[in-house]
Length: 341
Ligand code: NAP
Ligand code: GLV
Image (tube, rainbow, N blue to C red):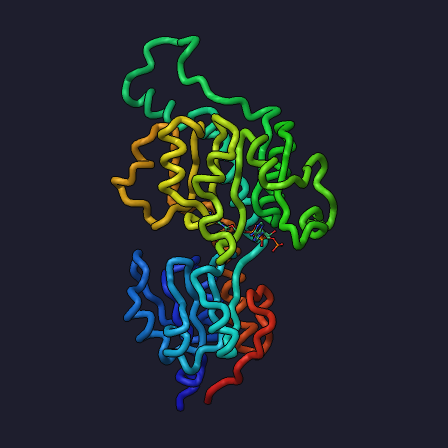
């Protein structure tokens, strides 16, 4: 076998930062899917069959059948913190490490979540359209009235890295921050990212959070427990006129129930970076509502953060191919498979 052919083969499912691809090419053969759209399932099944690693995106479904089709596979390295597109149990059972990119995208994603909160509160997208449509005829005392952010109550669901980064931003606006901790992990949930309490944030029951918050922002991962966690009952329990921000995953909410709560005038607005499905259908009724903002899943989309994520994803592959657990591993209990010659 030539020296080149003996290098590990990595299937990369979309063009990522050039610099990170060059780093990957330094220790592996790179099989790059160059299209702007994700590889179809049959392409993934075909290309993963001979691969030692896959650098996947959140749009790639890496389920048990895909993992079973890849006898050489030693690591699935996801360019995301969320790993809901991957069957973690199947990977662990097959001795395949799952890498992801937590931490590095925390502040960038919280920036977007807070930007959505501000945009929904002050009707920025709607006001921009109003101007472009030539409807701005004079300064009006009743034109485009929104909601105050300063001093309002923000409820955070998912008191993890991004939820707490959101709370730090809210503190600068003198917001009252409430969060709902999981009953089984109340202490851990009260501790901040650096191990310190976040000043002014209060742990409350979900019902209290929903009843008191002017804004509710979702930051949970998508798991069997959080899928559909926000439905008609939760929307009804929210304060009249409250605004929902979702930068977590679309499947955490029942989108039909959200539409109904908005159309009935109970909720004041919604700002969604994630939808179900993605992309949202252009004729989805939510897109007809002026008080809804939808962005195309861009939470971590800054140049610096996407480069850093790509470098971490490459580092995770390097670790696993060297027989170590990836530095950022989503299934740390895995017993790594040994290399197939
Ligand atoms: P993280 O640090 O792991 O935080 C997630 C938090 O959610 C943890 O504190 C976790 O609690 C909590 N949680 C899990 N299940 C819960 C439940 N059933 N009820 C209440 N809390 C629950 O993750 P992160 O970095 O903040 O990211 C959170 C999620 O944001 C990701 O999984 C991803 O889906 C999404 N995200 C989206 C974008 C975007 O582009 N829009 C970008 C990055 C991330 P425990 O610690 O007790 O488990
Ligand atoms: C993005 O949604 C991520 O999970 O990183």
